[in-house]
Length: 133
Figure (cartoon, helix red, strand yellow):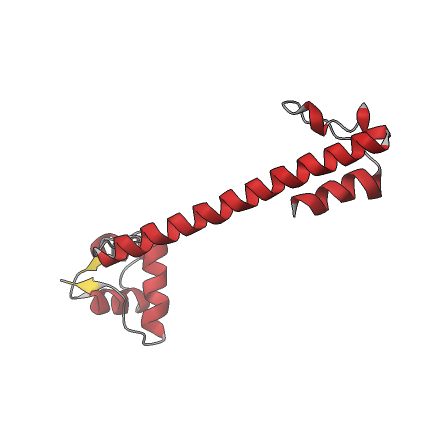
């Protein structure tokens, strides 16, 4: 990915690249001759290999950490909302225009966004993915 972008910029577009903290990758000065281009390409290939290798190692360590945490019973994600047992009655009152969305959301104890998602699920008859009290 990095090598492809480097080749596109230097060869296709013909632009020079200067990496501030790595003078070996400066294509302006030595990049005009063959040796400079070869050195720049070799250094970039080594750096790309190291970066890709490190990215792979990080993903592997992260996956191992997640697996170990799941084995220990750690729960990921946002905790489930706890809804009152009369949530269906409140949603029916809202749909019958006996309550406003703000009032109904306040009674249920959820945000308006969550409330509208509950209304949508209630309309199609889906069961809620929340624990009820």
